[in-house]
Image (cartoon, rainbow, N blue to C red; front, side, top):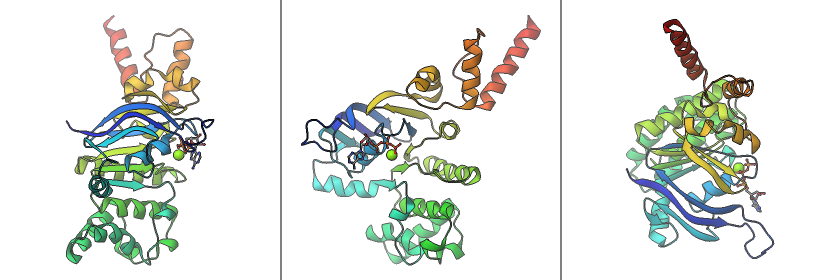
Amino acid sequence: MAVAVEFKNLNYAYDAINSEKKNALTNINLKIDEGDYVCVVGHTGSGKTTLLKHINGILKPTSGEVLVFGSNIWEEKKTFKENNFKIGYVFQNPAYQLFEETVEKDIAFGPKNLGLSEVEVKNRVKKAAEIVGLREETLKKSPFEISGGQKKRAAIAGVIAINPKILLLDEPTAGLDPEGKKNILKIIKKYNEEFLATVIVVTHSMEDIYSFANKILVLNEGKVFSYDEIEKTFERAAELQKIGLDVPDVTKVFLKLKERGFNVPLNIYSVEKAVEFLENLKKEEKTC
Ligand SMILES: Nc1ncnc2c1ncn2[C@@H]1O[C@H](COP(=O)(O)OP(=O)(O)OP(=O)(O)O)[C@@H](O)[C@H]1O
Ligand SMILES: [Mg+2]
């Protein structure tokens, strides 16, 4: 499998000239495989947004390298330009991305810049609107008169209309109600699966993660704390809590049981997994 993104000895300081200033990112070494769905978590200020911004070149490393599909994005102008079309970035605040008269024009902005024909642009807009579930009548509206959830959908549609191979999203569900959250997460998952795209999502919501991602990157004070599959990550639930991270409610219950001396595993992170574990326990009791 191809490596979509690689960080090599990446360091970043916002004020590199001021040597007193501490690094926002320190010695990041990491490979993200093509097609993976990665959630990036960490307490406030741990460097999540800073890392994301290095993938599409909004920020340039103070030292070290960022490779996208094997090419250093800062080596050649051509590579940098190509990356703009390989990588889609959805900002935390969709208002930064919506500026046209209508939602339709906003979604068409990217494909138009790709130099596609009018027909192809229309197709891309239609397909992207379909994926995110925006109706025809919403497309005709101004992006400023639609709801928060619809704005997020419009921002995501505008980005997926360029068919990025890597989709980066900074807290895409922040501020949405549970139903809206679920819808957005489903859209992202669909894009990941249908287009075999690599998806990297920054989130504060641990509960959101397990049903969609296959890997979790935990950042702590600008360093990689862990990068692993979900089960393996939650096995370290007690350590995650120590660095100020929330863990799923179900995991908390199992942590408490363990503290009280029960022999339970710690990699239970969803209600389904808990039910599975308890049912197996019942079966074992019956056969004893
Ligand atoms: N524009 C900036 N100028 C100076 N320092 C900054 C800037 N943006 C972020 N920082 C600092 O860099 C560090 C990492 O910030 P970053 O925004 O990447 O964290 P984050 O994990 O995304 O946090 P949050 O969860 O609050 O969004 C923090 O110490 C932050 O204060
Ligand atoms: Mg952030």
